[in-house]
Image (cartoon, rainbow, N blue to C red; front, side):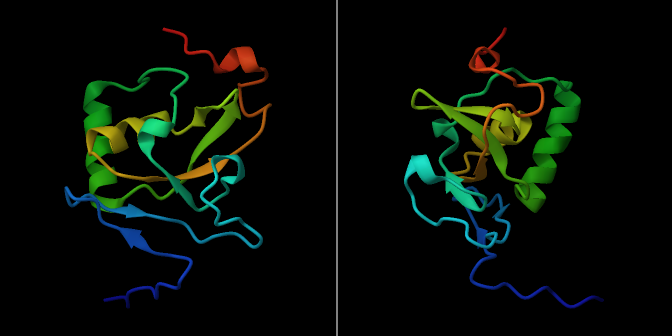
Length: 131
């Protein structure tokens, strides 16, 4: 059996009221720990309801339920990436993690603020939710 990894002050676990586990990644050097929405960085947490999806679910319900079970068992280990535009935090990577967090009633999720262009998001128009 392998020994458990040591948790430092920059790596910790948060247990929401429903028992689902969320694991935060270590803060990178120089990352801000401020709670200001304008200065979010890797390793910071946000309420899932402060994040706006830019598209809907793209996996089957069966796949999503399996993914949700993994999140419940292992937590969210990769930050949800978002772009702030006109006071709204638009998700550009992590839509399924965000949906799972909401369904599991997690109080906070790891986030990372990024800038456009990011992936297929090139302009502010790409942040508008398309049904």
